[in-house]
Image (cartoon, rainbow, N blue to C red):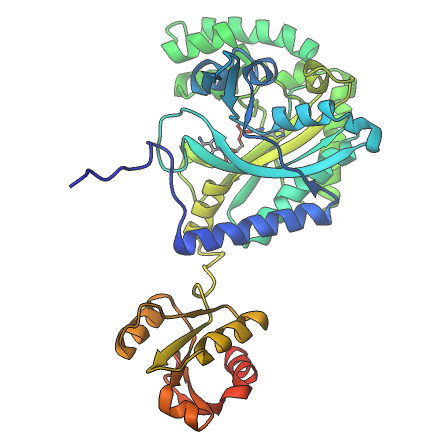
Length: 423
Ligand code: HAM
């Protein structure tokens, strides 16, 4: 026998109830985003590699170690998108969307690819849902974006979510801080591990994310990025905080929240879940990116957005027991006993036309086997159409929940099914 093939490591199928929950989650996200004025756009999965190198940044883990990059048939380097912001900004620039009234507000989602160490909540193909608002620098817009994500997550019923916020200021404000920080860490913890040494060399701000408890302890008493920020950055951050406070969105200021992508400036934020393992507890995150549009070849315009991880949200929903899978695949199944001509198929069609999720049994199986199938797919109602009953113009309706069974006139099928469904 041929050895069955499995999906590549870190890449999964979504089937059955998981798929239904996934659909519900996505629909709710796009509905929430639409209520805030974010229209959905669809951007490609493939982009030129250079887009991510320029935007996400050469020194980041994503670009250095995690991208799926390959030459196309003409030798051009393409990459499976590791995130969506770069593509959204490229789309904004390519179609001159700044001509359509600013801010340009859009939602997006889909598969992202990063060659990471696979563990629960960390996959190689994963899925994001996000929004971006490009073109206007206003703390009120930051507040809107952060609130949208908060509303969506808490609206799902998740209670154990914490919103972390920080400001990392402008690049020029960070330059002096990064020098001071590097020296301080090297002096306080002289025997740094290889990971942290690499961070200090390539992307010193990322030392704030160090996993080494000695470094974290040293950082607690060390210089703070906030102290290097100028008055504009500080007042922007204060406005964001007071805006969130005014809307009753609870937040925690986290001085060490720097995030793993290079394009961020000013506000950064993350939604974490207490129901997930600490190493993968970020349900999503985002921030302001002031130089990105220009870096991609567009005008000098700021942007802000976030992306949420679908798999992690579903894990958190499972842990908190919310967003339960809704019902079976179909509501009604039409079963056939004997030769009923085309009547059964017409009843199926009539129910489907009336908007009822309906299926029927195939393959000429026994009535017993058909009932077993009805049970497996989770139907609520079975309609049994028998050759002899049809002579009298009736069919049998069985409520598969209660087991109750009645004969009904064929022409009343839709109405009687609805009565059972409404119970
Ligand atoms: P990110 O923090 O890299 O940000 O990813 C956002 C979220 O995607 C994470 O918080 C996590 O929930 C999920 N995620 C990331 N990597 C994986 C993985 N390997 N497996 C499962 N889930 C994962 C961004 O991607 C930015 N583009 C967000 C943004 C939008 N910033 C501004 N606008």
